[in-house]
Length: 109
Length: 113
Image (tube, rainbow over all chains, first blue to last red; front, side, top):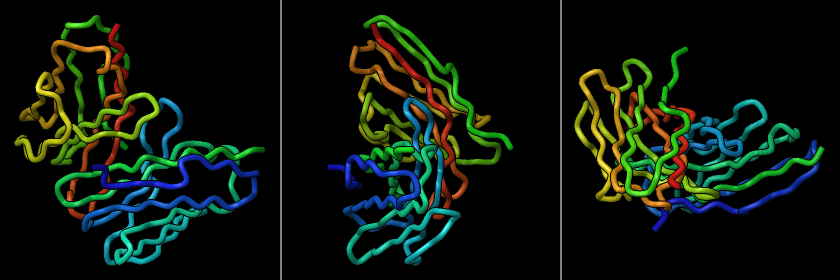
């Protein structure tokens, strides 16, 4: 079964609001990465958090990792219409990278 | 900076035909991954190579094969194509499989008619 599950599956917010997406996984990981994908386009790496890290920031992105709960969250602050995309978490187990089901984010101008 | 290059970007084939996708990783990256993403689906891991040897295998059909060449580029060969093979095929490369990030190409869109 799939390593990563994300929720919500879809999220619609107003521009300027914050968006939070969650990812849960099943096995031990070396690191967890978040990717963004515009419709029909390639995957763009956003941020990587290692298994010994608990929180990481990059611009308007904030990622947390709770290895005891096997979960991670991605927070996008002050969202913009251009943030509209699908967001995937990917877990690195050392052998493979597994992608979650993705959260489709729509930011309404 | 050089990125992961995939070719062709678009490919249209008939059922039962054969298709070959190519991937050129970022220079000095030693690991290549192939993913398949169906419409509205998350990327599914197919196969990976480390230093030209197959390192891991995911949900890759027996009709598919792949290899990594001496110059580190990789090719994904798909035979007896089926309608369900229509998807975006992504290649990614990385340097450090323990702590490194994946760098993805733009993908090759295969349409099987």
